[in-house]
Image 1: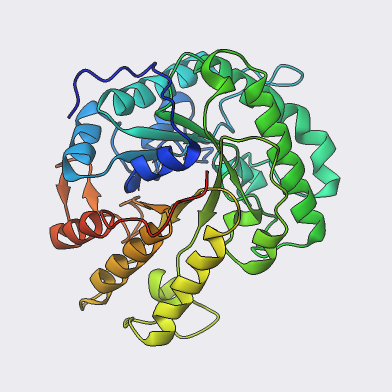
Image 2: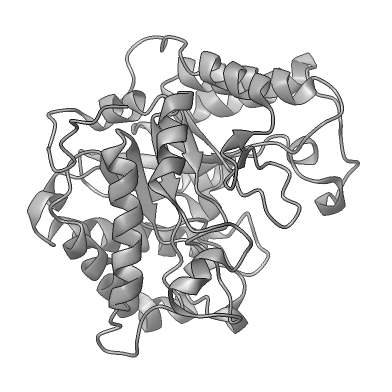
Amino acid sequence: MNETIDIFAIEKLTAAEITAGMKIGWNLGNTLDCLTNAVSGIETETAWGNPYTTRRLFEIIYATGFRAVRIPVTWAGHFGAAPDYRIDPEWMDRVETIVTDALSCGLYVILNMHHDGADLPELGAWLFPDFKTYERHLDRFIALWTQIARKFEKYGSHLLFEGMNEPHCEDDWLGSPENYIIVNRLNDAFVSTIRQSGGNNAQRCLLVPTYAASAKVEPVQSMVFPRDDRLILSIHAYMPTEFCFPACDVTWTTPRTEWGTEEDRRQLTDCFDRLAVQGLPVIIGEMGCVQKRNNSRNEWASFYIREAKKRGITCFWWDATTYGETMGLLDRNTYLWSDPLLIRRMIAASEVRTEGTPCS
């Protein structure tokens, strides 16, 4: 661990160089992103079963070989009414403490707006990319990001912001032209807000997603990127979903326990090839696979991360561990990895050299 890192330094690196420097990332899932009415305030950090986050956790992440963490944060339930939408200072300070702990361990950090856009308005979700809600909620979106940006304006290049998590409407994960237009508008508003907020935010790298953070052809091709030279495309890709997801969640086809055919490999490389030519560096902010009673998950993860890295794409494993989410790998009470061999193979795969020059 680098004890002397200056977490406030701005480095003269391009967005592509920063993306490459992340090597491989890990998600602090089911923690600050909890969307719940069961508890309030900072107690929501543990509402979904994970313990309070410690600096020791990030020391383990860094020592294992990860060089970045994504810290999903749900702001719903932690801010007040219009017109100020003032974020609860205790919640904001807790988020800052966790971000600072991760940065001081030498990790890049991605801070986002997460389940505010979930399909659960009864729990407070509000950010939906459609015409009927866009005008009503744009002021809230800008007000929240203005506060977040100002809180973190002094932090350096190792801190990145991600404007939205998986912006989608109800259970529609593909979207329509209307939805794509609104995602583009929200991305524009996000980038403009951060750039106008002062401090190091003028140079901070920012992640912008497609509709639902989807890697599918239509959402990707419909992206109109804001005019800014420090942007990164944010994608989530649990591929193939019938292999990666728990069998109980696979209702549209037969769940799979095996992976590795030529078609399986081509599905991934075709996707990575398509993403790599979009004109921005790419981060797959969520990927992962549930446990298997064979070696298929290890083979899948090695191939996935290696082939993505060859194309300049950095991957982040979704680690949640609670509520039966068997993509989880790190026990946050004991700080032990459930599958050390898988972790070693993931780290090794992330060290492959990029083919050619990544986008900048």
